[in-house]
Length: 268
Image (cartoon, rainbow, N blue to C red):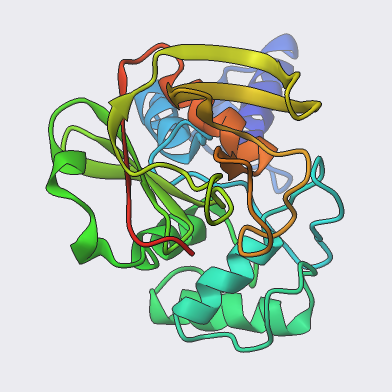
């Protein structure tokens, strides 16, 4: 584009001097034609922009994570621990889910990118996440067949601390979560559907905010947690705790949809 603007400017200058563009003089006095470099068609530019456009509502979407990022609080989750868990399951990282994106995490991302024939940057871009999320859905063969039927379906595997979101028979996304404590607070297994939603719900019973709550079985719901830093540490009072950003992501994708829910798997 800079070349084109330069050519247009040069042409305008020549015309203003009363010399036809095709007869402009070179410094040596010779005549030469000016051949403009044309910009690519607008349709091609628009198509490229669409390919590069990214939304957290997209399939396999996750925010970019890079060197120096950290999961510093429940309201500042950069998905570093999740990245480290998934890199571990992918077999390219073995330094634990510590929540800080340091040199070892960066090298794990690079190793994974090389293996997947992605651009090797050490930055977990949305394209890297798309491959990694797809590759690290755990116990895929044990996901109930009902999850793979028509419509939208959120399936929670209690043993794997994993939610998979399905649409029309294929996985749309997956998140790491935690469920209810063993005994009276266990998240109940079975099939149901979301019957009530509240973006700013507050539990009077437990004196706790439950943002992006989607209720599916009595008082049990998918919602953002104000306490969860690690999905494999601690439990809820029965709900499916998600990172607040993940609960918002699920909300944006499904809040205007009829969402079926399946809870399965042994307690963990």
